[in-house]
Image 1 (cartoon, rainbow, N blue to C red):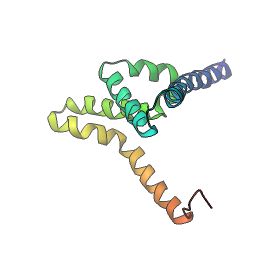
Image 2: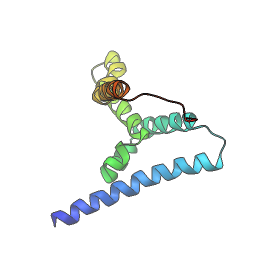
Image 3: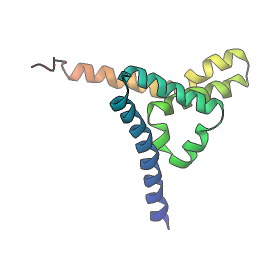
Image 4: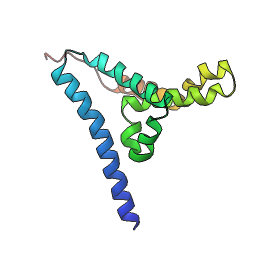
Amino acid sequence: MLAYEMIMGYLKAFLVGGAICTIAQLLINYTKLTSGKILVYFLLAGVLLQAVGLYEYLVDFGGAGATVPISGFGYLLANGAIRGAEQGLFGAFTGGLAAASAGITSAIVFGYFNALIFRSRSKIN
C-alpha cells in the first residue's frame, strides 16, 4: 500500500508540474511574450491564486509539482505575507521574505559556489 501511495504522489506531482510547464511552453510558442514576462506572470499567478485561496488546493494535490515551479515561489511569498499579516502591517511586509529566506539564501550560496568553480563563456565558442 505504501508503494502505491508513493507512486501516486509522484504521478500527481508530474501531472501538476507538467501542466504548469505545458502552459508556459504554449505561451512561448504561440505568443510574442518573452521568457522574462512569462516568468513574472507565473510568479504573480501564484501570488494571486494564493491570495484567493486556490493555490493551496493545487499544492495539497500536486505537492512538489506545484511548489517547485516559479508559481510555487509566488505562492510561498503570498502565504508568508498572509501569515505575517496576523502580526500586523510590518509582518505582512516581512512575512513573505521570512517564508522564502531559505530558498533565496541557498540560491545565492550555490550560485556563488558555481561562479567560483565554473567559467562563463560565450555560446559562440
